[in-house]
Image (cartoon, rainbow, N blue to C red; front, side):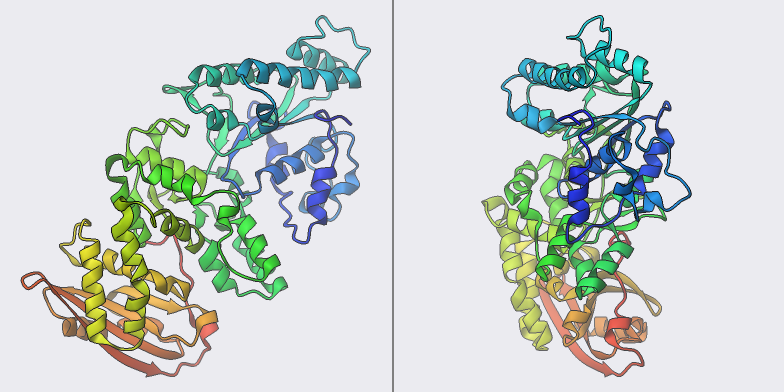
Length: 544
């Protein structure tokens, strides 16, 4: 057992001993299927807080020939008749590139320390072989493999830290990528090369120096989708075990969904764990990423990015092209490039089928709210959000005059958003109702009766004392026309199983007079089922 060579199972066992451990060892079936094949190069990129290092520790323990089978007793990977291929049959090299980077001041020094550290462990473990050159990492590994016939499993954590620490040093980046290619590509001693980080593999123009790797990212995690974070089933089980409200958890941390049946909705793991242990739902994002990091990128305002961010804060989606992204944090040619980076950082969810991005959940939305609190360019949004409490209070109180005034103020503040139809009005209202997200799931265009209700606010079980809101918007037709449409088309029927008060809210804008009008009616209807059963779940990847 060395520092880098066959590091053992201590870090993996530490995770297993923790108060909350979610078994992700089924991931090893996927990796063992490509062990020793031409698909043995795997790069998995994830945002911070999504369990990258924990997965790396698990992989190391599994393939390390010094680790006993008992380490995996009772876990998913050990429930079949036999372990998947490679269990305890390899020499493992475990590297955290950030550690080497923090101890050096240049790429030359970095690469020298890296190679010397690996050679130190290898030659200490296998001192008696006949080496042609004991100072050449590739030749030493060739010799060890020829003698032991144990393939190497290379596990590299924080593989992309070079591009974050040396964002403008293209020569340092090139030397690093060339080293990885020469060390790993087409080498018989490699049984599996697994890299994990935040960014996908860096390109040279349109070409990648590491084109032997298959990439699994937040754009398309493929077979590894259910290992991105906690699945809905895993999250629900934790909520039951810790006596926490699952619907509240869903609103806070859900939103990363992928078009793979075995994955479904994926929850931010670090945040879920913190919420369970602290017994409180809240924002735990800033423990690893600060709002300043987000603010740097959205302040760039590449190609109208700011307007796109505002629309997404209001619950909308944006169509993007991810193919032009240069896989770094400095090269941006369009708003699409910035938004693609935000997908990889976890600040945006990505719908692979529709090629659309969106803000995934309330926790991340709070980061945007914080990032837009300061700076003149965001002041109009900040004022709208600050006034959202007054709008919600006016609606709940049935005060039509104050509701209309609050909507008019929101329109004034967000007038830079194109505001010439009901769809634009709905974005303004969604943003103005920001405060409602503390208590409600907000659904735009909810299928109901003979059409779609513009906005529906469904109180989560934890806030069952609040009324549901059905909001209909009208352009040049008057607020009463909106109320009539709710009734005539049976929009409230979408809440037929909802037990409690419903507010019908009609809001209109008269283009000629530039006046807003509001009408509010109350509807109380008993239902056969309780509220906790009746509140529909919100699919963050449904049409926004």
